[in-house]
Length: 206
Image (cartoon, rainbow, N blue to C red; front, side, top):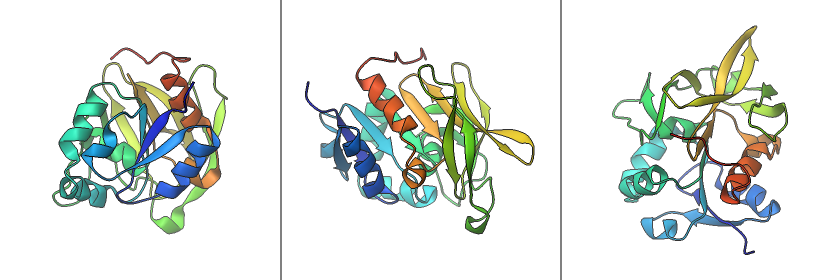
């Protein structure tokens, strides 16, 4: 069986780190900088970075509509940190002019865990069948999921000041987390994405 071709949106953010993680799991990472790079992919990663910058760069690269087509069409997709914001239907505190792809029926708040100096590394719960009970969590100016729509499953929470905050959701072929697994080296989210490509773990029904 040939290696899964996994695109990594390569406009800004932790692109190389995600590519190394995917390659280490036997996948073939493909940097995505134009619509042509989306052709023939088995999955897609939208990495962390600055969500408002990524949103603007989608239009510069002509990628907004092509991404909506492939992600909305069921391409297994993992969004991390800013990737979660980009996928969300609603952003509570957008930057001026900021939009999103709107493919995931959730409301998020950007930078919910404070400034970069308030970054934390801890543990978060993980509730995807077949995976571990917890994952290593790095939250850097991370978004929080405030509410979820019908069919969206909460798959990860992180305790902050004694309160469990939602940092991971899944719906259909889309998995999105607030965290930076490329910084902790935790492979769980990427393994979950690749398992869906192999159909070892069926996608949730939208």
